[in-house]
Image (cartoon, rainbow, N blue to C red; front, top):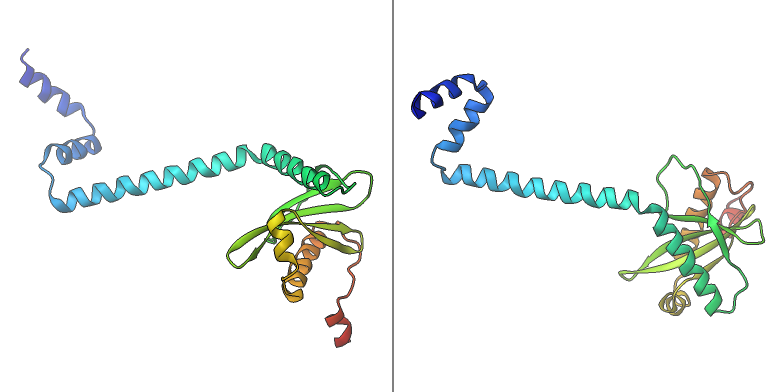
Length: 187
């Protein structure tokens, strides 16, 4: 059997979809076809990279939280503070809120929410110590954050405190919220 007859026999066995793609591949490419292929290839690469980043983010959740806890504890040690974080606290929140991690504090019933404050285009790491009544204090967790905290308007800090208290109330950490001065004036 010759090669030409083998090819004919093989082409008859191909399903219609494969025959369609075989015809596209064998035809000379036009500029519009090349553009479509290039756009499809680029969008495939972007989608693949996004999926890879999402997968890595999900698989490294545990090490991220552990490294963050060690970093916050080293900040406490450097500042001669006796407080320490003891472990990650698993909370179930069903609404979108402030992004951060909840940690248990060693030797106390208080919790700490580690998050970032966005000021003048810079992310400043901060931690909010939360008790059953609400946020007790907000601690800057870097040298630059400590410098900027003194210049931060009270309204911006109050906004972040309200967001942390809302997230704590949604996850059941806060039993009763304290009223801010603005809410007390309205009543």
